[in-house]
Length: 383
Image 1 (tube, rainbow, N blue to C red):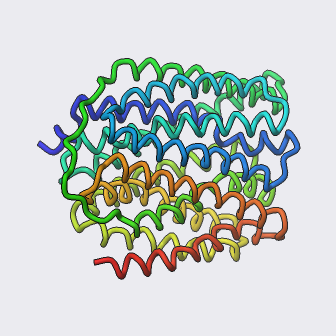
Image 2: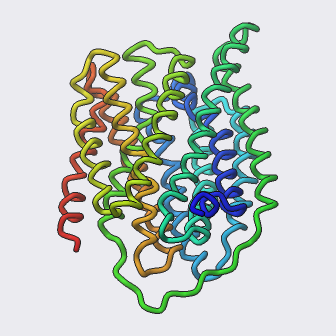
Image 3: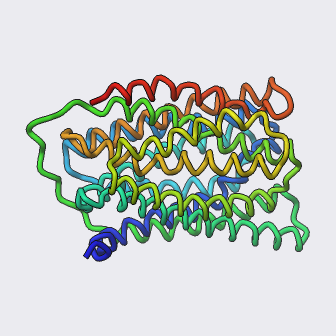
């Protein structure tokens, strides 16, 4: 019976949107930091690509969440977002300056703020409370599967373009075109997603989940350091873009397992208890990372860190929607604060990368992880 509920027709369509979106976007996301460096960007400017994206996404997500509660409309935001994001992906093909790239990333953030929080709201409203975390986890997992497939496709494209003699920048432009074609397929899928009715308005409101909002900010900041990590692998360890794509492919596989395992644990033992299985490994790994020099050990600790960060996403969404307040506002606020964290994170990480040396170039994770301490304190005090 549970399997039938988790894989209902409506939920499957929503899972599919996550997969299509991540397949298209994930195809060129790993190469954007390197593409920016080839256009002359500094470490701070590479970080600003993510900061601008997340700032636009934060503002849009908050406004969308409030409006979704007021009007009851959800699907229209998903359609508009998908349509615009594939147009932006085509635009990457013509970019030959850093500031043009920064502008398109900002526009892409607006689209992302429209489509993904709206899809999360629909998943929450279509899933029963007893398996809501697992439904959110499966939504994230299908996105990860799309990302996993994108790594494989990225590797194939890089091999083929190298064999036919294209330069690195030319091969990147081919990737942008293919990603845009995939995203237009996602937009076509949105046309078959029905417009859901507005959920009943809650009369008695509880307090907003401030503790999860604070943790969402911190985890969002660490999540957004992924582009800096890619540059670190490329420049400190000398790993090629193809090898990085293979490395991220392995990370996606392990993340899928970690996400579903943590969400199953959450539905079994409760949200607050399961958060500790995410926070503690994340905190420890972030502090250790700058002191590791052996590549294999670094990869193991980095994988533990990224799996913890990814596992936080479905748990935090379940936490935010488990409070007696409006779902749209909670999801919108959580996405806003997570994205604002993702604005601050790359700036800190990029500054540290530019001005520190050796393994301490990646110490942005350690500095931001210290902000988990007040988040943990608030969580402990919350009844």
